[in-house]
Image (cartoon, rainbow, N blue to C red):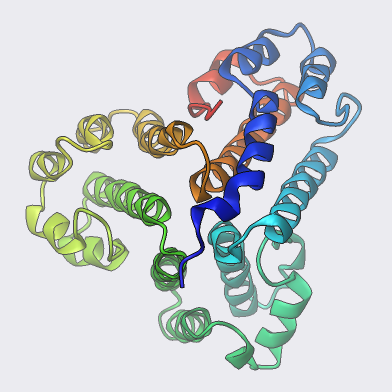
Length: 330
């Protein structure tokens, strides 16, 4: 049963009031132009961040992860429909599953690589995995973990295990969007799928892999079907599939990347297309769109802050960092 848009009225108002505190491109540029790392970090305090000017790279990472976790936890309690927040938590569950499967395969403990941002704590997921008690997890997630573990044991190919988990992740995202009966969330799932598939197709062609490999890497459920992408087969035909979509420019840059052009510029264009979709939520006064856009904006912001701060701390040229920054929601 769908939740009425009016149920999001108060939450939408709260999030709209917070949007002016989000990191803008202008502030990111000021951070990059700052004379020192310390000055760069202090510029973030106006966005509600703690002063990170004396933190190490590890401390910055821990702080940013905890900030993201706190936002997820708060909005999970306030959201009329938890499945909206679950869409953003899921990818961390699947990241953790990849860590567990690969760590077991090489006889290592991957606990330090696991995230606390998922629906299940690292401790719970690890225990269920070790005890082979995956029945307590969502059926799609549990089946994907078992399949990935089996494939990795049989083939010693971690990439194939990743493909299995990636397909299951997107299947869960689509299912959550359907449960929420939210067209904007379904659209977000769709453009994420399209962006991921375009990246996979370009990488496949760039590496000279065959179409069978491409097919194994693609995700069902996008507005451009995986079958159509495989049938297209070459860069010109694939580019044509994305004409008149938000990914049209990214596809054109991808065609250049196939022949040795910049993969960073291509992947940047893909991610910016997703941001362009999310920005359309600004036109909606209230509803789940405000929550979806804010959650995505926070994730994008934390990625940008991490990139800028750790880059400046390591002495990386600000222009190099600038080239890798995605568009901001704010």
